[in-house]
Length: 241
Image (cartoon, rainbow, N blue to C red; front, side):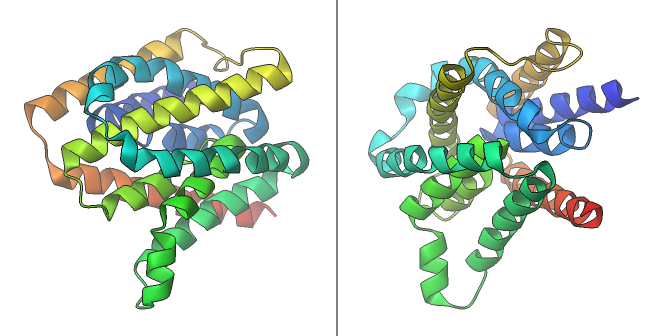
């Protein structure tokens, strides 16, 4: 039953990634953390995210506005070491509380009536830094970046292309750092070949569906799915403390 649940999650996360350009790592790690230690799954999920990104980044790379991404990428790189320190030294249960709580807090701040807090939460430097440490800590760095993109002036197509290129670059960086530190590649548990195949099938289906018909409600639904999963994860983590 566990394997079927993980396989379905990979299929769903792959579809979301192929359609929207985001959400894969966050969805998968939130599911896997219910069955495996976070520290063991983060490198495996990031490597899988990097592998399945290739069919997307081939098309999106030349359409990406790297002028927009540059400050965010630099801030992300600055945030990555903090995430690694947390991954190494903080207890697993505490990580499961901190990250979803941070993501939900950022989303709530975006809807506050305070103009100062709203502008701060949409800062490219803050969102990039938060995306960096949440990526390396628990492979859930998509939400801060998606929140930033949602309030940009870019079209859905431009947002999708930018997110695909951003996550590809950050995954390359974080996976590379992980290999330098640990001198090994981390693969998915139980079915290191079968699980990636399922994820790629979901991704290609999502990609095809996006090119057939771009429905904005699906992008919004995927974002709220991430927030919902963060809320569920936070609830279970607090209960387990």
